[in-house]
Image (cartoon, rainbow, N blue to C red):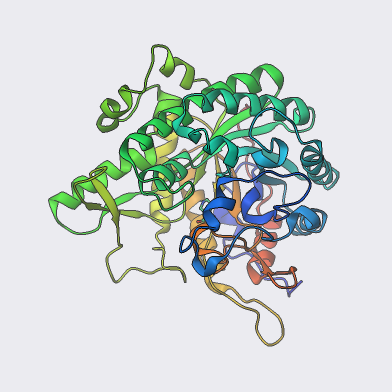
Amino acid sequence: MQARPQARTGANRLAVLPHDFIWGASTSSYQIEGGAREGGRGMSIWDTHCRETGRISGGHTGDAACDHYHRYAEDVELMRRLGMRAYRFSVAWPRVLPRGMGKINETGLDFYDRLIDELLDSGIEPWLCLYHWDLPQALDDLGGWTNRDSAGWFADYAALLARRYGDRVRRFATFNEPSVFVLFGYGFGWNAPGVADRSAYFRAMHHVNLAHGRAVDVLRSLAPSASIGAIHNRQKCLPSSSSPEDAHAAALLDQHWNRAFPDAQILGHYPPDLAEAVESWTRPGDIAQICRPIDWFGLNHYAPIYGKATVAPLGFAWGDAPGGIERTDIGWPIHAAAFRDELAGTAVRYRLPIYVLENGYGGREQPDAEGRIDDRRRIDYLDAYIGAMAEAVALGADIRGYFVWSLLDNFEWGSGYNHRFGIVYVDFDSQRRIPKASAEWYAALIRASAGGPPRGEEP
Ligand code: IFM
């Protein structure tokens, strides 16, 4: 490890955080595990997508990723040394159910047994996310999320995980960023399964919401002491120009990106401009099935996003940020006050305890001649964003934890291995891990932050 820097988000600024505030890190199965052909794992839609020419920068795949499938103990030890209290990971559905349903793969289940036990032995609380985008290919062959049966497939998968891990895992999340994988996977066709179709998009949206509600019920009945949430990206949607058409597109983007899932799941209705399109896929009782009580809101945030007017198929397009804005190395705008506002707005809108389950800086850093990675710009970003989170707490938002994205540099979807989000550098040739300066900074911040006021009752 490198020399220990002091946390700059000084103890004063963090004194508003509750004394048992949870500091952790998040990852996801396809992005780090590798071992794609090992232990009986089935194919996922990302295995397929990565093999389609031109989909992923450099033709990269998650076949090896960070080799976490074999190196999980080393990764847990890293987190322990950094002082993390919690780790959010996802289970690869095709690793435990190679065809998505039916025959169970014990070898796959054993892997997560070992990971969970290693975490618990190290004093790190496991936060298990059921779905971070790697749908079994066999289910996609049946229509994937566009098939209404997907809600039942997901409920059965949730039951398997609750029965197997519910004795040791208390924190369960249903989906990570449903609006991203549904919009990019079925609306724009950029992500797996690469579909760009208006009807498929709205069907998938509704079925993912149904699957969420079904899974919440299953988890409650099979793991009665579980604390259950869902993870949504919340980002300010701004117009990419001063035209009224772009202003309208940004407002529409907000309904699709920020509200289609949490409004349905927590408030029991779809945003106004989506309701009619979803209606044709809705059956009596669906909204009640979707809107099941949950215990917390998992919030992911990186940067504002920009809407641009277009006619088809959804009435908005992904716009560029205007010039003159400070950006991360990979080009995402840096705007910490927007994070504060999203946190404060989410607290008021949904009235649930919030855990920040993703926030981080995308860079391209490489080790220097001495093998050190001095990622100052990531530290500056994290310092500003964690400070903004503390401001939201001071404004009254009930925020109970922060998980940095990500523990490790990993497979960043369409960008392959070119964008690095880790606080720990990964040399993808040797699989050597090198904690960056930001890892030491984060460890110092965790040490410095203990000691705020107690908070309300834990769900
Ligand atoms: O890497 C992703 C993650 O899988 C979902 N949220 C955003 C991250 C950075 O793009």
